[in-house]
Structures are given as structure tokens and as C-alpha cells.
Image (cartoon, rainbow, N blue to C red; front, side):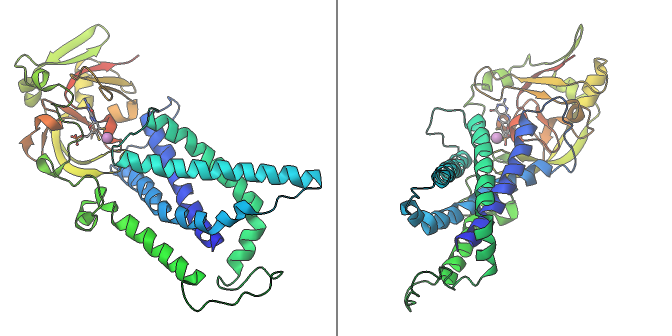
Length: 369
Ligand SMILES: Nc1nc2c(c(=O)[nH]1)N[C@H]1C(S)=C(S)[C@@H](COP(=O)(O)O)O[C@H]1N2
Ligand SMILES: [Mo]
């Protein structure tokens, strides 16, 4: 039973690790790593899978720990020394694995609920412990491979332990097969109750989805203008966007931005917390703005917000996103002027990027050299 649950737990952790790496490098992109800008929903699907495999892993991990905890009280070999040392190392790797797995699922779940009852930096810690979890998992699979193979090849209700006297099979309560079925159903319920955060069609059945899709134009609001004290700056009549390429600079009012050629694109906002929503965005191509200050293609840019305090006020955008014809400085959403909470007077919306980098209330775009 433990091998069967463990197999799916391993698959979930493996997928969550890979999608987690993609999310990490989307937010912290090394200059040598070109990230794909298509399909436009790539980040949304990647992060949806990341959160979904994490949610599915919660019941799997609980059952797995329940099934194996008697092993904690197993007798430790006393000799030969080699066995004592190997046994100690294996136990140590399991301690790391269990601690890291619980930490990853608990901190990830808390993050989807935007609940940070701790002092450490969520993203850096969740990322570092992810490596620990996967390292310990590989050691564990390596050590247990013969046992796993034997177990998966046998009938789950057969007694594998031939040295013990055959136990009288209880006719009441769950068989192993019954517990396994319950486990799969629990994982499926956990997934369906949350997956609607990412896929609006499933929202009605996702009773535990944290973000409901409420908000102007059906796109949730992550932080309101009021919460980050940007209202006055965003509504000031003297607002003008600064575009800077070394000594070449220009400023554009919102009216002037509206008179430039407009591009429309259907693009999602996909928050790292796991929720997503699509909208029909309309505005000026960032690439067109860069052309106006003579910026060559292939240049990284820095986008800063009118917001003065708090995280996510500024982002670096790698050249492949800055040059993409669908990367917009959006002025409108679904035919209406951007609401102030969605980033009025203008906000970044780029394909296949995490929501956290879709900067709202943009004040300045600077070409980095
Ligand atoms: N200036 C600024 N831009 C921001 C944020 C912020 O806090 N400040 N939050 C980001 C995050 S985490 C997300 S998911 C998206 C959400 O955009 P929305 O509130 O329009 O849905 O905005 C991003 N842009
Ligand atoms: Mo976000």
C-alpha cells in the first residue's frame, strides 16, 4: 500500500518540482535562459499543475505517513557497524524527506490562501526546501527500489511478510484495497475543490478555491490601489508615463497613449498563488514604445510602478518578453477603461508570465544596457 501511494506521491512531487522550477526561473530569470513566450497560457497551466499536484499530494502524504509510521519503532541493527551506519543514514534521509515534504505542502497551501504565519521569505524558502525534498526523495527511492518493485508486482491485499504467522484477516473495517480507493477519491476531491481557482469553468464546484473570480470584468484583484496607497498618484491629472533609454527620454500622458496604435490580446493573469483569469486587454505594444526612444531589440527593460512601498513595485523584463508583439501596456480590459484596482492609468500584461510581474500603475519604463 505504501509503495502504491508512494508511487503517486513521487509523481506529484516530481511534477510539482519541475513546474516549480519553471515558476522560479520565470520570476528570477538568469540572462542565459531564454524563456518561451508562447503559448500565452504556458505559465497559467504550469502554475495550475504545480498547485494541483501539491493539493493532490496532501491526502497521499497523510495516508503514506500513516501507513509507514510503525516503522519508526522498528529495531535498529546493533552490528555489523556498516549496517548501523547505513541504517542511520537511511533514517536521516527519511527524516529530511518527511520534514521537507510536510513543509512544502503546508507552506504552499498557506501561500495559495495568502496566509503567511511565519517570518521567513516564502518563495526563497519554498524553493530551497523543494531541492531538499527531491534530493531526499531520490535517495529514498534508490534505497527502497527492491522493496518497491516487489510490492508493486504483488497483490495489494496479499500478506508480503512471509516470516510472520498469517494474520487472521478481519472481515470488518477497510482492506488495504479499500483504503487505497479512499485515498484516490480523497485526492480527487481535494483537486476538484480547488482547481477552479485556475480554470473558471470549474469554479462552481471548487468550493475551496480561494479566489472566486469576483472583481471588475471578472478578473480578481490581488492588491487594491487603496491597499498600496497608490490612489492619489494614479488619479493625478498630471500623470505621464516616463520612457527612458539613456539620454533619450520621453513622457506620454494617458491621452497621448490612447492616440498611439492600439493592440488587443486575450491574455491571462496567472498568480503564483494558483488562481488565474483571462481578459481581453487593449493598449500599446511595449515594443512600439521602445521604438519611440530608439531602443534596439534584444534589450532588457525595467518597469516601475507609481506605488512607493511594498513588494512587486518594479520588475525586470527579459528582452524576449519586451520584444513580443503581445506584450502590452494595457489601457483597457474587456472594452472598459482599466479600473483603478486593475492598474489605471496603465499596466503591463505579457504572455506566459507570472501575475506578480504584470506590474500595475506603471510610472516608468527604462531600457537597461
Ligand atoms: N504595482 C503593483 N503591481 C502588481 C502587484 C502589486 O502588488 N503592485 N501585484 C501583482 C500580482 S502578485 C498579481 S497576481 C497581479 C494581479 O493583477 P490584478 O490585481 O489586476 O488581478 O498584479 C501584479 N501587479
Ligand atoms: Mo500574484
